[in-house]
Image (cartoon, rainbow over all chains, first blue to last red):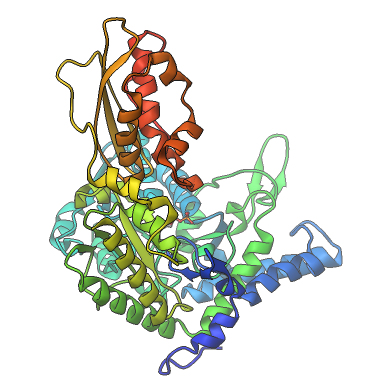
Length: 414
Length: 138
Ligand SMILES: Cc1ncc(COP(=O)(O)O)c(C=O)c1O
């Protein structure tokens, strides 16, 4: 069921699904603004995990008995549900369950990249990538002799699309781009990038870790060849990620891990592999997590991804406006009305870790550090930044608490 | 709830804003650097030993980073003056926390002990006990 897109969210009802939001930190109510790192988990998802272990727990694919059948069906259907969530009309065959975004990206590097790339080839990525793709493709380039190029960002934190067009050539075999930057909050024009890449015969990997939780996703409209994201940032459990891949591509790729569960016929001499997606899910897979991720998709869709997106944008714009009212706060990335649900900043004279420690005393959880984008921080000329990131259960009042806490830190260090 | 954290009592803020013995020494007996990658803190400690090659006569630090790491370095320069290398070697994390006079949250201990570790490693390099380029607290 999809909810209507017009009314705003019933935040109180949503908050009641997240008991953790009732807890206190330092004797004050928790204000959880670290959603870009990990989101909280609603009761229906927690119940799904508990329910699975209470009623269905069993191994999949191998058993004839009732529990194994039930677990297998639920686990397989979870792939279909996730496919639907991201607009993959190919269904389960295009959805591989992994451990997290990082593993999804590593599968592409290992199962596709090591075979496909050589010294004359190029990988094009951007200055704002998360380490999970940046480090992976840096290593892939090193192993295959391929060249890696980084599309630059401009002063507002947007990708320089002219530079992108320069970087992507007929030698480019892969373009890897983050959909929404976890540091700048930039939402990249992935469909446009994908068109440029395809015109040069390159494949496109979109890192959707920060987009899948916050906006409607249609991998086919983007025309992504691969799309990677994590369950724990979208109301699902930890321990599960997704790699979407176009079916004919996944079919052409060799498995990444070998073992049980991914095989059809095994002799001492040779093995034939299972069909998609099981070919890429060796060993006992992430059963409870996969079923719970499907439940998280139900939960988010019932509220409505358009509405979740609008709520995130509204809160982010509000936080951005309030932070901008201080002359000694520098905010990174695009303007208030054009960003993903997060804002990274620094207070002049207060190290981000000190800031995070002080706002923690007000019960406020924000992130401080390099957010796994060290090269981007180097480009920005800073060692660290503070980041507040929002989700469907956050309120304007919580932004006010954050601002008050930051003001406290400013005064302390003045 | 009062202004700010217990971790940021006056002494820490004072040493952060007005660091003591800040800078580099002209002819240090030894000089050593280190970093705490999680916060991006960097510290250099310069030490001049007395003629006995044992007693710390002068100490200075330079660096950049969070208030805990920088205040800790500043306080340490005061504490080390007059100590011997053996005294320095015996310092541990609890001594540093006692010197700071506040509770340090577990995630920030690395910031607090950076200067101490840099001074200790610098001394050990000087006496030939170890051979490293730079110190890290992780
Ligand atoms: C943009 C982006 N890509 C990748 C990741 C890695 O996700 P995970 O740690 O779940 O693999 C994250 C989050 O940490 C992210 O924000």
